[in-house]
Length: 309
Image (cartoon, rainbow, N blue to C red):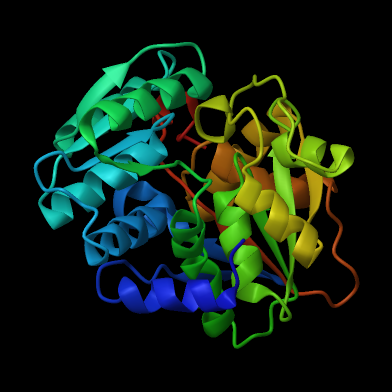
C-alpha cells in the first residue's frame, strides 16, 4: 500500500535526477509526455527511487548491484539507474522482448539474460539470481518504492495543470504506474485504468476481488503483458476507486497512428492505450470534465508505423 506521502518522499529523494516531462494541451485534454523521461518511459522514476532507497538503507552492494525481470522497459530503467549510481545491473527478459529494447539494455551496460515465453519466467529466473548473489531486486511494478517513484509523474501533472485535471487515463500492465498516480492524485482527481483486452490484469482482479492470473497476448504484451496485477496496484485501485476499461489491439494500433498524425508523437502500443480509450469511447468524459492522458513510453520500432502520413 502506498499513499501521497510516499510519492512526496520519492519526489524529494529523486529531485534533480529525473526529467520534469512536459504537458501538451490538446483541446480539452492534456497529454503528459512521459515518454520523454530518461530511458523513454516512466519507469526511470521508480527505478531511481528504489535504488536510492536501497542505498540509503545500506542494501545496495556495489559489487553485485541490482537485478530485474522485465519485458524491456523496467530493465532499461534499472540499467540506467544502476549506471547513474555506478553499480552493475542484470536484466532477465522474455525471449519475445523486442530487439530494440535488448539492444538498449546492453547499451546501458546491463548484463542481459534472455529466455522463457512470458514475463513470469523472467521473474522466476531473477528471483533465483537474487538468492544466489544478494543483488537488490527491483520488481517491474509490484514494490512500494517502484510505484511511489512512478507516482511522481502524477504529482507533476497536478502541479502543471494547476490542479484543474479531473480524470487521469493511465495504461496498465502490472499496475505500478496506475498505483503511483492514483496515490499522487487521491482526493484531487480520478484515475481510469486502460488495458488491452489481451492483457486485462487489473480488470480481472477487480472483477474477482483479488489479483488473478490472466492469459497474455496482443500487440502490447511486450510492455503491458504482466500475468496478474500487483498487490500494491490492487490495494491502491480498491482504496481510490480506480475503474478499468478495455481496448482492442486494433484500437491500440489506430491510437498510435492518430498520435503521430495529430502531434507527431511516436509511442509504443502499450502507451497508446490511454489515448485509445478516448478515441473509441471506452471512456467518455462528462460535460466539462478535464482529462489528462499519460503517454508513458516510446521504446518502439517505428518501422511498424507509417511515418509518411
